[in-house]
Length: 214
Image 1 (cartoon, helix red, strand yellow):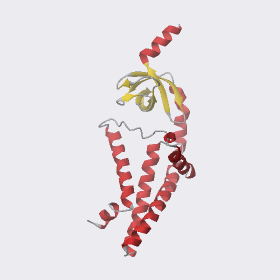
Image 2: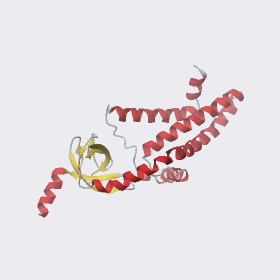
Image 3: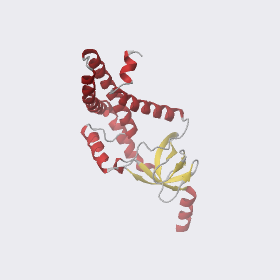
Image 4: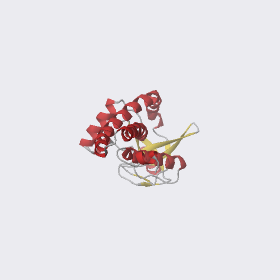
């Protein structure tokens, strides 16, 4: 193997190589639309209190809040991988003792993570205004009809497409007490700014409830 291959496939760089590969696969699959991802990568970090505190603290420290979680994950994975690669390269070149390389590798792992998060915060900052404008426009979509594009919609997972002024928007959606299959027509009835998810109901149920009120 070349020196490059050795570094990216050995500790500590291999850890960030794995996460970077996940990010690349996710974006390729999303771009090509080969199949649906039933993994909600934008899930709330509140699912685990301990993990939530650490993760939220990291996001707040480096001002990585207000962006899609998948974008943050990809950026941190990329920049941490680059930092870790060059640290590991310099270590392999100037430190010949293997056990010392492993000890330094543990240190480089955390250094790369923190520097990766810091660089990500700086690089993503110009996009903050874009996502703020998107959040402000979210309330204007309430009452519109969308079509389910994921394999299903339930209270934990789901995506739907809505057409606004000729443009197609893919939204995260949730239901309360129903599971809706792909291609179902739904109506956006609520928006949770914290999770970035829309509450939806089946279009037929929505129309029936409106007729009952008349």
